[in-house]
Length: 283
Image 1: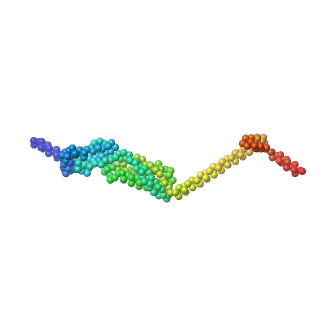
Image 2: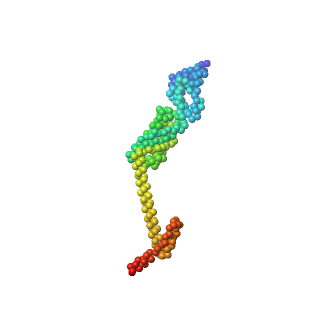
Image 3: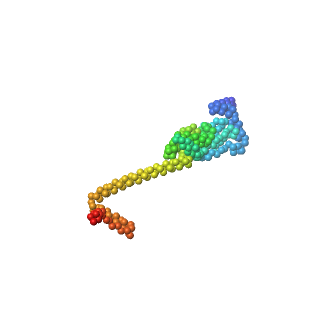
């Protein structure tokens, strides 16, 4: 009997030592024992308060006397908690998306734009999301808005309009690094819309129109220059062969006759007109 009593005393001392190591202390163990007795006395009614269901995409962080139990999250499935001493927080591990409200941003070249975006993130560490930040969702949303304003404020308007993917990747890297301690993984950031003031839109439209008109005039001038060069080469070829000029006359006549059948054109050599003029002078 004495040896059994000594053994029980040693076991109780060992439990107290382990409790002290865990940090809950003697009072903590007393509260746990009372909580367990209360659950046994009120059985089966206490079952509805002690057994909780954690879904497949959730994890439960259980606090026992203010400390996280076993240093890891529980679930999915059924979990057991003690009344009065245990509390738990469920954390959703699915990918969460939220829209960044339109932010009025002053760019590096002093242009005011309204930019909005979308952020996709998920929680990979339930304990970090609960223990390291008071509200991980609100904190992530506010940090995304601030990061969007800070990053776009260092860019020119032309860079914002043409390099959206690079800017979105930069914002994603900054957010992912900042939220790492919160147990958050930022999967993707997209810039949805960039809205400019009406005056700026009109100015950009006028600039684009003027640029296109100037380009059209240059192309037209280059075409005329190439056509004049081709005509010059053709005139040189025709001047080498007088018969080629007559063939060109006949070809032009055939073309006109095909398009306008009622029109008849007779080519009149210029030498004949010069002969008539010489005869008139002699008369």
